[in-house]
Amino acid sequence: MPDRLEFLERLLEEPGPSGFESRAARVWRKEAESFAGRVWSDVHGNSFAEVGGEVRPRVMLAGHVDEIGLQITHVDEKGFLYFDGIGGWDPQVIVGQRVKVLGRDGDVPGVVGKKPIHLVKPDERKRASEIHDLWVDLGATSAEEVAELGVRVGDPMVLAPGFVRLAGDRIASRAIDNRVGAYVVLEALRLLADDPPPSASAVAVATVQEEIGYSGGGARSSAFALDPQAALVVDVTFSTDVPDANKKELGSHDLGGGPVLTRGSAVHPLVFERLLEVARQEEIPHTIQAAPRSSRTDADGIFMVRSGVPTGLISIPNRYMHSPNEVIATEDLVRAARLIAGFVRSLEPETTFVQE
Image (cartoon, rainbow, N blue to C red):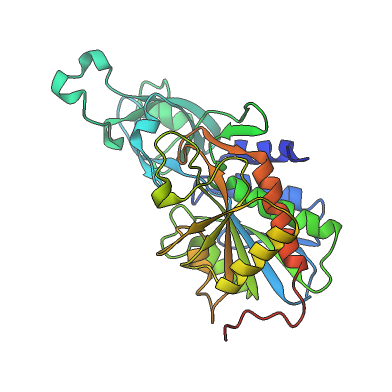
């Protein structure tokens, strides 16, 4: 397991739905301040940590710190809360869950309500629940009582299950997509701080709004500000070591099998080949994934910034994505951080990603 699993737990436990990432981002920045040369944030809420200062080439290391969540759309006269999703949800996952409302005066617990099965008509029982069929119950008896709790329309919510350690090196938590990406890029930066690269610098970025960033989210604005010579994005991908996984579509990626390197779409071929060579040299297990259209990650928001940013994508195999119990192997995080650090150290002043 990673030496700093306690930091990962703190990062995962802190709520940070897209557009409301500040609490998780503060945990990330506080950890970065313990070793990075410079730490800062921007108007969008992106967080930055730097090693190497003005040395070029500069590599941007991006992992988004936001998670999917819920947002209150209406409070009725009896105090029930209605909501919509922040990011992509399967509503069946929400049914029966406990939630945490991020209210004005602090977190407020609640539960998701739905009509009991006994009262559902037989012809309705096979119909999947939709978000508009559900509500949140705070125990309040009126809209006025909800207001007294510091809760109002627009407040975000997250599902409440906590971090848990499973057998071996596996963990389960909400927000693994993609709080672990923000964790990995910071751990890679820590390795570079301990053993600085001779000819390159790196900036780790905990980006915001990836789950709703249909025009690039915080990844695009942070890449524009940094103007890096290369970028590595860390996200999660579907683990295919579970029942009924379609390996013909997704490839073969197991928990504990190492990071997944993407080819195609937003990924620069020379960055991919350098990552592959570093993985081979350092004997880091890995698999390869095809992305013939979009990568559906921050890479899509970075690679076309300015005159183009040579971009690579490293993914962590993840079970049960977009659920309150996503599962990963922590050894894959360690290997991904090593791979990133090795890539940055491999760069020289004359390194170019211009294709000829």
